[in-house]
Image (cartoon, rainbow over all chains, first blue to last red; front, side):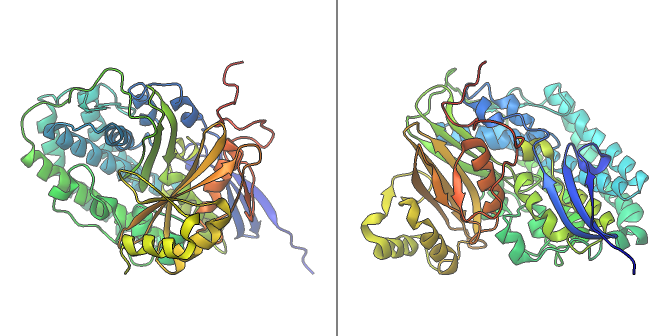
Length: 366
Length: 146
């Protein structure tokens, strides 16, 4: 009789599809996955402790390094939380600029998710197409803030500086070309039979499990749950825009990427409307140089980031530094379902599941 | 579906004096003794449909730890914050993993960084720091400088 025993192999942390330092301990029975246990902490920088020794304004650049693939959304969550805590109103124009930069970040993040998913399963061209298009967004970030990846462009009370002249033609031509880009993704990737075979029915997650495990963002909507914080609990000025929330039905890897592709289109719609409605005026409110929120006040504020529900919890003791700051990172919570959706599948599907859950480890490990 | 006010009234009627109402600008906020948490959570989830435990964290107030749960319901979007005080020398709380599986890693994170033990947690190990690490960095008495 053939002797069989379980084999444990380590995927990551040094692995191209480990998305920046994720270590998965895969227990295998032949090719079948018995368990896939994520080990975190390789990018842990103890940012919550650091916050306790930085002033509120000093901490802004740190937040840019949580979700470095959608940096504006990460910062937006933080500055909005502080503004809520301290009761700061920001100028209209700043709100619009934040929305535009945030949605551009979402597009860039989703493009990278689709592209890296493609290369993870062997479709190199898919990555190149997505990177080529994402590059144009990175250029726009560079125009506005001088930084491509870790643009700490937002400030408590508004925006660092108004948008430069050259930003507007760049964003308009990007929006104009976007339908052609999506058409290319459709032709090259989503219409590809091999890609469909690799994604459809893989890593299925039910709506009940998704909610129970706290999965949020595109991963939750792929399961058929119509839940987007921009609609459910509108923050900033999201109640002024007309956009849809793309929802999947099967909760499999295919739905997870298709939902992201649809979200790119909706984000573009939001940017178009924001460009149209944006008023002239100031971009920064007058904020005291040293911010001291009321003693004992606290706030939990959440936004819909590219990965899901990004929440900041801040407690103030009346000083110039936060007494306690906690980040509810969507990537951290979403990764919890990796064992659940990988069990019983093939080892190659672990890679698909990691890629389509789209975690960013800077945020998961903090 | 019950409005948030009926939920609060129901909690008050069931546990009376044990529940303390806290003033907050953004949340309906209650504070309960930690022994009451499993019963309360069960009711919130089963009877009132609070199915999304968004955030679970704790604050070190030097003489006590304060656990904070931010709980939402999908899709009708009500929200509630629940707090509980823990002893500073022996911080132990009942685990919420059997009610909301999402509490699993969030409780492990608190165990790791804040040193709070959760009774009934299936796998209470460090999650972000190495297993051999000593101390809990998010405690206020943690030595930051060498």
